[in-house]
Image (cartoon, rainbow, N blue to C red):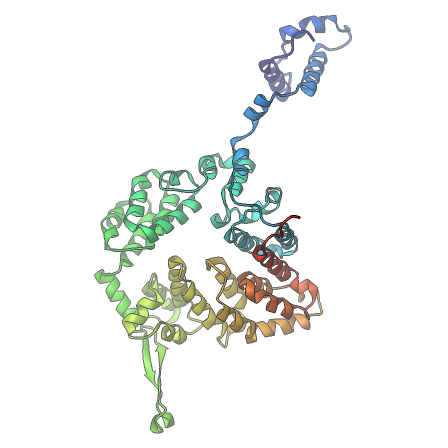
Length: 475
């Protein structure tokens, strides 16, 4: 072929083939016209042109410069992540976990595993991202530069998020280019450090965001909330979206020091009071006092949950305890395990503040309650999703010796059907929460149990231990 086809010629041929020759007739490129004319009259000219074009593309080799130009920018960022790839033993354990975990809990468990990898200073192996990304992409805590770059390559529909996905880290200068989940998490972290500056970041872009994004970003202001935020929050009473106005009103009612907040806190504190132990103990001088929970008179019947939710929303255990003249432990111990509205309010505030100690205390009280048989899986899963670190050694020892865990072990030992052999989450969430130092003890507890029940828990434990083990030096 004397003159090769140009890229424009190839593009026109491809378009004609895709649309169909009935819609886009094929025009023979000038360089091929002599060859088509010389071909056998019985051969269609269209087939001759396509054959020549196909052969040219088959044997054409790109130069290094052309190849570099065609490499997507996201692919370069995928390998620009400075974090080391996770050790091979940990990688094998993670893949076993991904293959063996129950489908119903796969997203939550694999996200917890990925956070363990990130917390250890590593990143996922690029070859494993196609297998794992669908489970972890909704959790911004799992996504470093490499994972975000892969998302940019794999999900062409989210082109609006691409600029932020390819940034090495989120900063005040580029935070508006990131997806909503990353932006809300960033704003919360900034509020913990510099509340006023973080509020200014949101003010500057607030009007240009859609209602759903405005609401989620506004909710992040609950961290570090103070009277300095009141002026702007009150101005949002005229926002065009009712959802935003509702969130703003809730934040205003939660500003410490305001009359509304002070009144509500005092009413919440009155729900907790010391009750003297009388009777024979009093007469022999052994009387003591314990805190009890007494909801307000309005919290009755069908309105109980709504009334308590409105009363305790945004309040912390420490604030209520101080106002009631009690200790934090007094309040937690006095709260009935089935008082869902108050538990949820205290738990949400602890998550908001990153208060790991209060989260563990609230969970401990529930796990130790008489009704604990109803809570363990949900409580442990909640802890694993919200704690910023493994549970304390004291918490771990208490849980490993608890009646709830021992009951679960007995249930698996006596299981005689495939369904009863499945881990309901008790074992795998235990592995996800324990510090590495306590995992050998837990693994020994799993030894008598059927492998089908313990597979995911063992794989998670192996992952954590492999992440904690220093890599061997090559010889």
